[in-house]
Image 1 (cartoon, rainbow, N blue to C red):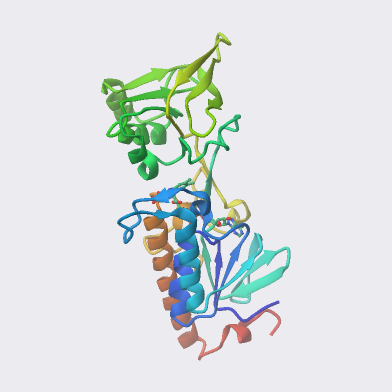
Image 2: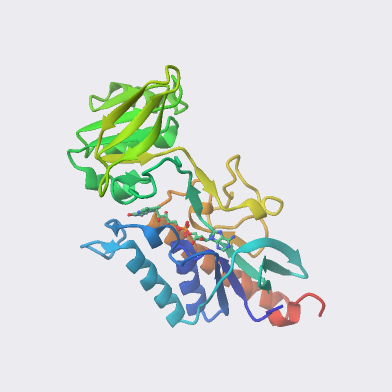
Length: 322
Ligand SMILES: Cc1cc2nc3c(=O)[nH]c(=O)nc-3n(C[C@H](O)[C@H](O)[C@H](O)COP(=O)(O)OP(=O)(O)OC[C@H]3O[C@@H](n4cnc5c(N)ncnc54)[C@H](O)[C@@H]3O)c2cc1C
């Protein structure tokens, strides 16, 4: 077991990388564990226009690389390994990976969440070319265009109403004949002149070669197929947080997102959660980074207090079996 670290971070998206920067810069021995590629959701995103400091926008992968290099510059280490478990042992949190166990007194959970995809032909190929999962991020690219939203919950209507600022027409496609969204959102959507609904219908295929040109729809009651011309598709059928291995340790909401206090505490001393993995996250780059910063600052306070309480014992001295 490598007992050298004071702060472990699970997930190398904007929350984890911001946490890593602050923690390493506070001179804490910091290791970030990432299961895939660093950058998280922005590693495959197109232009980002709403992250402060980049008036001309910045490509997602470039921003991810800059965040990583900034954290590494101050001493953060990164290893590419999926974390599959966490246990509390002898005052430490011990993370398990395929390559071994990593203990540390402070851990920041920044594993994000995955958008639930439709899983239909054309969706993956046209993501970033008309298919999006974030109106706040991409809505402005669809000025005066016809756009479809798939979903019937709060996110579908909330983000759909946001899209009406830009688009010429918005079609909401829903599998059922009524919405799950809050009544007030329903009233606003029904009253909006740009919004129309197609009920009892599923999207079967996203059409287009280099850019979305339409959607192939199937009425679930009649089985009839039709094509809807549009230049954009926003999918809001839910998020899946990466918290499967955490359910016995921290409090999760009914969808599996981690419930934290205002300073990213999970209820387990020294264990924090940051970014999209949190209940009530705004699911934006800037908020994820902000959460990561708060979590790292709190972890720093925790380590300082721990050292004072234990008379300066190092994490190594706290390791299980010693
Ligand atoms: C296509 C796209 C475009 C977007 N555009 C914008 C935009 O323009 N502006 C904006 O503000 N927001 C945008 N967003 C949203 C933004 O990217 C997210 O809010 C942000 O990335 C969340 O950061 P995070 O670090 O919390 O989580 P994530 O970015 O999801 O990162 C989590 C990381 O943790 C890793 N991980 C998960 N579980 C484990 C595990 N068990 N072990 C190890 N690693 C693990 C994942 O591989 C991932 O790299 C966009 C999202 C997408 C998908």
